[in-house]
Amino acid sequence: MDRKLYAESKVELTPFIARNYDTIMNSISFGKYDRFIRKAVQDMNIDKEDHILDLGCGTGKNAALMLEYLGPSGHLTGIDLSPDMERQFLAKHSNDNRLEFKKQRIDIPFDAGRKYDKVLVSFVIHGFPHDVRKKILKNAYDHLKPGGQLMILDFSEFDLLNMPWHHRLVFKTVECKYAFDYIERDWKEILNNTGFTDFEEYLYFRKYARLLKTKKISPIKN
Image 1 (cartoon, rainbow, N blue to C red):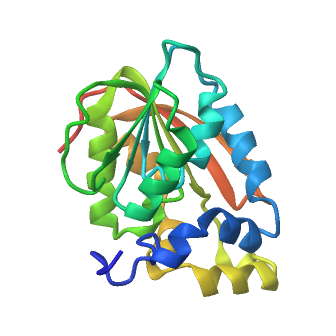
Image 2 (cartoon, rainbow, N blue to C red; image 1 turned 45 degrees about the vertical axis):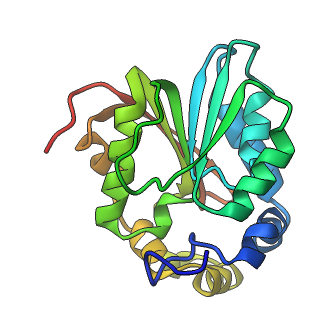
């Protein structure tokens, strides 16, 4: 991106990082990125007929894994703002009519034109100020069918000081100040106050990464 919308964010990527995103993520996770992403998608328990919205879909890596579980009537919509991500996403999936890409910001209200069984937000929401995260959650809520599931794949809640020094060094080097705030918050409480309930969590990468699953149940609270 040419200009950041949020000065301290590191999820708004430079063109170089966007073009090499999957390789970089595998490097900074000590080669474990591919494995735990695949396990997390498996833990989503995708049904063949699911309609899935992938907010901040990036290169389409997660989409490719999710499509393995979708049948002919399943559908996946990927949303991202980066032109570099759009090119990689479409290159991976140009011949699959179960899938579409929308170039769109996820931090402002939008209408994707349908309701979804599942919404995935993968390693995106931690990189925004907290008031902006609430807007992303509202978009997820508004696009889910009643009883639909929100899946947040991101950092878990942990004490940075208790990390091994080499993991702590990587986290401090590659992450922004918003991520430091993210890992300290009670995300089940936040989601419960945003109209979600029935939580399940799956931990990966020495419990520093988590898939948090929750359902849209009650009307959203103001």
